[in-house]
Image (spheres, rainbow, N blue to C red):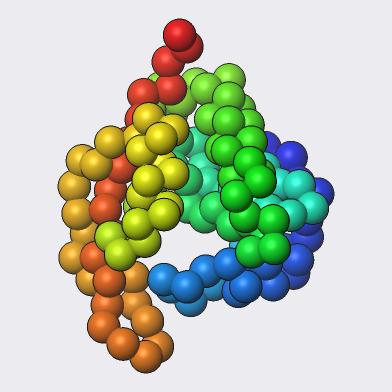
Length: 144
């Protein structure tokens, strides 16, 4: 299911501006992911949440908000819509990876109820600089 306002080209351009911890996805990679039967894409003109739902698990693969509009509640709204839609598709748990060095994102996900459950060493590759570990986080998608 895709509830999208942005095109893959728009998403790639936005992600290139918003991401600092890893290279952005290409428009082709985003288009291929969105075309997947398991894809879940929520977007508005200033951001998007992209992931998938397989059986009873959701996985957030990318969350990006226009840097000019960060800290205006857009990411929270996108995540709420992503989680609600994932739940309606049968997901009971949502997983994500976040750069261990990305303290603001880690705090954001923690505020949404995500808990650290593991680490992936060297998960994020950078063109210039060392690889960055990812913190794996999860959240139960239960009501109430």
